[in-house]
Length: 95
Image 1: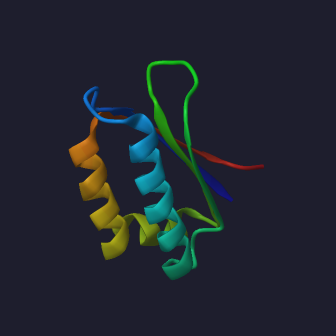
Image 2: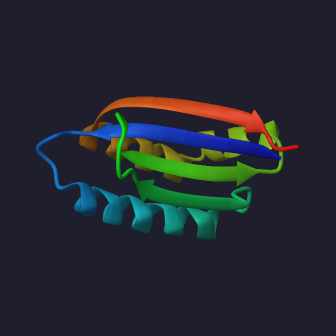
């Protein structure tokens, strides 16, 4: 299994809770149309440099790549690019 974590900094002029609500809505939709997503949660940080997170699980790297390249996921990424100013990610194998 692959754990895929992505963190973003939200543009400072935006309402963080509103961004989280929209990201949650989009993530729940993606979970209904992309069967490769085994788990996915989004959250706001209560402290730290990055404020928004998705924590997701995939069976293997092939399924992660299917998700990453899915056109609906790409639409969500494009939206995230309009509401965030920095991003980092971390992927690892769950043993």
